[in-house]
Length: 327
Image (cartoon, rainbow, N blue to C red):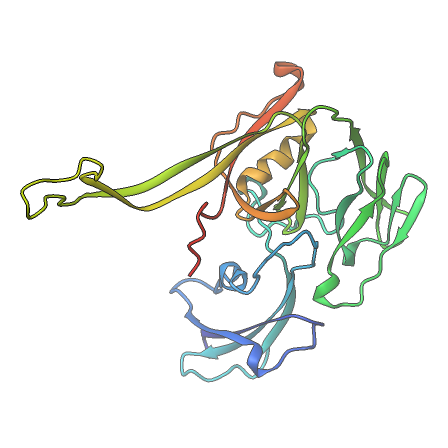
């Protein structure tokens, strides 16, 4: 009896790992083995991602889903194997990604969901630390411990620990509360001249991450329109000079802003990279959380050896038209 094909049922759902039913069956896939091969690969990442609908209104919610994969193994007669079938596995999925150099399906950090070991937070302002609850026992900020619990529900798999204003050091520990996994240094920035803006984005771990822009900000908008030539000739054989021949219509505009991080160290390059690669960004602007798109496409990473002090200038475009035409 030769192995011939696999039927894969994919359930995608929220809640606890056992909280699935027939309505959570999102895909049924069928693939046959290639001649000479002994295994079948299914790429399910993009399929699952369709069910991670991430929104943000300065609220730092946990966006995660359970994925249950039930594989039915069949022979050349399309008969199910009597052993090893069905094979079922359950995964927790976040909207993250790996880099090419990390290889296929890289295992990302399962504790602190930040790449950098440095944070820049305005003086007198509390911050947020994203952690993966399954892999963290406690978080120590300066001398204060915060115990992390995981009840298995997707709505708390990613937790955002509040960083008290003017803190200096964060230590993230394993579930044994003794093994140190990551240490983060906090720089509390005093900016007396410019208005500080907070940009939040989805980082490579699938968590919300904040970057503050401390220095000069400029705002501009670009107008789009169409025109047509109209007839202004009157039946009397004259026309009014105050009426133009060209009429404007479909006028709108898009606003963009250019902001500067202020001086950051080389370790912070990873955060800047992930901001540029993010497909979802928001800015806290005039008391509202608004969606923006990074418009700057080229990034020259700076180092302490080559550049001494590093400031990054990034242009963002608001992800909506100036004139409201939502229909």
